[in-house]
Amino acid sequence: MNILVTNLEDLKSQKMLHCFKMKQKLKNVAFKRGGEYLWKINAMI
Image 1: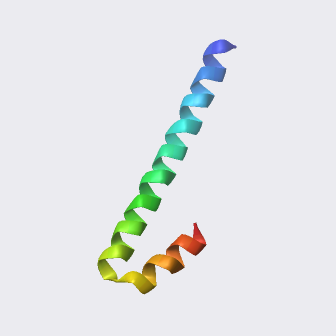
Image 2 (image 1 turned 60 degrees about the vertical axis):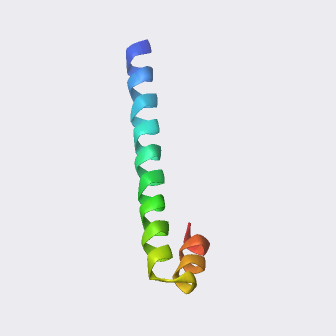
Image 3 (image 1 turned 120 degrees about the horizontal axis):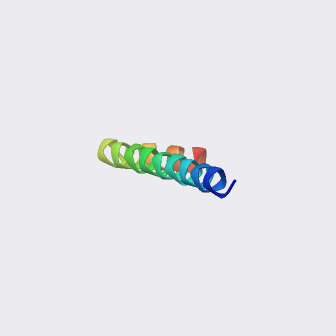
C-alpha cells in the first residue's frame, strides 16, 4: 500500500515538474519573440 502511494506521489511530482518545464520553455520562446507575446502566455498560465 505504501509503495503504491509513494509511486503515485512520484508520478504527480514528475507530471508537475514536466508542466513547469513546459511553461518555462513557453516563456523563454515568448521572451525571444518579443514582449507582446510574453504577457499573452503569462495570462494563459
